[in-house]
Image (cartoon, rainbow, N blue to C red; front, side, top):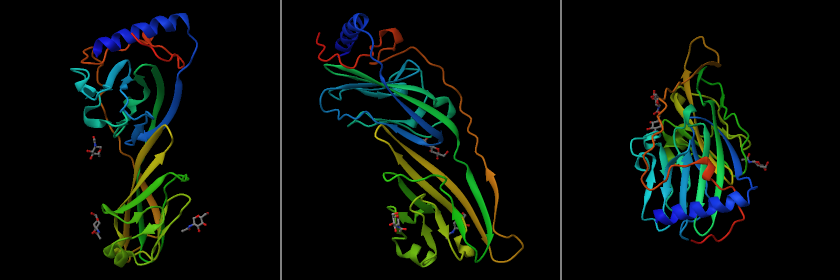
Length: 284
Ligand SMILES: *[C@@H]1O[C@H](CO)[C@@H](O)[C@H](O)[C@H]1NC(C)=O
Ligand SMILES: *[C@@H]1O[C@H](CO)[C@@H](O)[C@H](O)[C@H]1NC(C)=O
Ligand SMILES: *[C@@H]1O[C@H](CO)[C@@H](O)[C@H](O)[C@H]1NC(C)=O
């Protein structure tokens, strides 16, 4: 297997040198810190494709065509544990999920699909800012809108949680269980353009943590984003409904060094990378 891949690479490199000129697909993905992002391969690995993912020239995930060898991160590169347990490789499709993404994960992720032909796709991932937790304080009886901050597209899925219990399902269903219905009666409204949640006629028992999970889908990738809202409703007192502040969570992540050790994945050399897309049927 490894020899086969090796020879394929040589054959492709030679061909590339005589017939250069095609640029790989490039997909730009913009995420926020702590999002999870899935980069789709668009294949089903039941046809003997080998799939490899690279980040900074290092193989970070590999799945062999016959599924006999699968690795992620440190398993592919002994001694390099850049992502720790934040990488997930879908064994059916080879799609790669990076969880709890951080600033240092910004960069190009290169997907290689190798069987009788070779193809490559580049995902340029940029990590900007952070989904901050928002704090809302108000008096009983008012209403409050917990703002998603986005315009929802038809394929995007929004789910709301109150103290970790799901309160909305699908775009429209609010409170499917009895406890939720009793707690909120008809006091919740969902904006179907933004997914924002409005609580009317607020009560002290509405206080707690509201969590919005958004799954933002594109054909090439999907992003799971979580936004938190801390709501405090007081029964009397002086504070009038107001946005009190924003809590910013800063994540410090040490940049892991890139090591050279490889198991099945060869270390990637940029010069040996073919960019052709129409070179079908390489056989060695
Ligand atoms: C992601 O971050 C959250 C909150 O910091 C943590 O609870 C969770 O375990 C992390 N997940 C992974 C896979 O690192
Ligand atoms: C959602 O939007 C559609 C189309 O704009 C509209 O017809 C429908 O009434 C809205 N649904 C709800 C529950 O507001
Ligand atoms: C929700 O969580 C908050 C904070 O932990 C707690 O004070 C409140 O009692 C909880 N509310 C319910 C209904 O569980």
